[in-house]
View 1 (tube, rainbow, N blue to C red):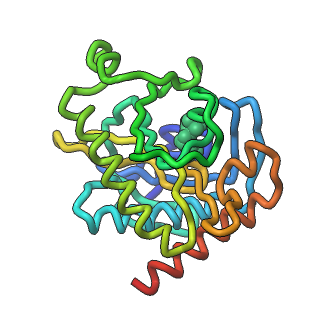
View 2: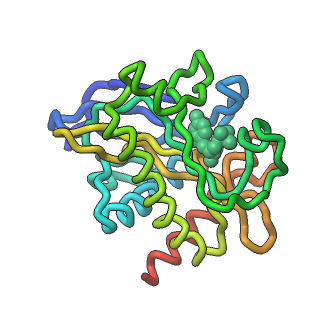
Length: 239
Ligand code: C5P
């Protein structure tokens, strides 16, 4: 597999063309941004953790019969993925109130929701990824009605898969963000599943083991990323 020209550079990843037009080469970076790009920094070895942890989660999600863009790991911080026609939405699933939901509803972080909440955000950096609903999506033509339903159902199914793994690692999955795309008329999970895109709290100590440590200057950022990776790897090695 040959890495060709850079096609897209995001905040946390570079995406390259390959000698096979149906695949992209994704290189995970250590760069970190928060507060809609206002806070910038580096998290040492984040690229390695996010690549390999995402790969582990993608494999488990595939085993459950859900299509993902993941093809294979190429190196510690590179993976091969299928090219998707991306749906410009972020699907956020929440089990426990934190972050923007705590602010929006005026509810304490840590409040346990009686059922998971699914939210849709329109992916647009300049607008700060605004919260939207299904009628916005339909009226703007961002996704078909069937695909809008499907990505929300998949979000809830993936929530169950991730929680089942993380509970064995002593981690509460507070919330997370997914992105989806379409290939040959079918919906695929894309992007990544990592401490950048999820909130993980230690079940016993309630310590944050995710990007909130960077966002909120809590220290121990690298250690938290490594700790999640170590625990998930151990759980899946036993499975
Ligand atoms: O900020 P908020 O509480 O809405 O984030 C919900 C979840 O989605 C968090 O796990 C956060 O890391 C993730 N997220 C993300 N990318 C964004 C917005 C949120 O990964 N652009």
